[in-house]
Length: 93
Figure 1 (cartoon, rainbow, N blue to C red):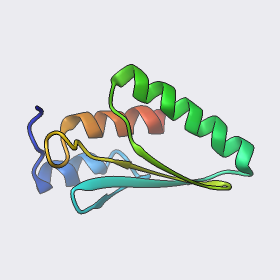
Figure 2 (cartoon, one colour):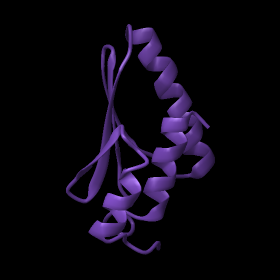
Figure 3 (cartoon, rainbow, N blue to C red):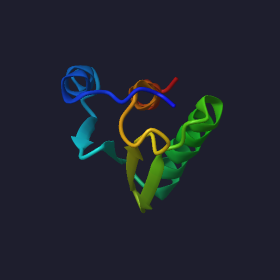
């Protein structure tokens, strides 16, 4: 189990992740694309990153809009794994 991040750590690290916002014990990001096909290309890329990291976001798809939510359920809140996954998603690693 990973160590939970405190609010100061989360706030500081989110400064480098402008797409992501703190929402309770989760971080969330909303992405908008030209159409459903582009949204699905993005979701499939996120799925591959998540599989590689063995850390999976909640994904909500609404035609051209995708909402991703990260939290470490096994730890009961936000950990460094969530921040690292957000960086991977946002940078397209």
